[in-house]
Image (cartoon, rainbow, N blue to C red):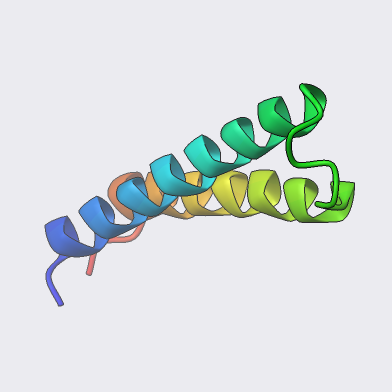
Length: 64
């Protein structure tokens, strides 16, 4: 697996986790998705942060 492919995959994962997290958070705030617990939203945001940090580290520090 090449470095650019891995970085693109991690960057896309960051965007997906962040986008879904924001969408679920907003829909829960509007009262549409009230059955989703706050822990799920927290996990989505933590997943986005983790993917973003790994993508940044892989791009700048890890020379494969």
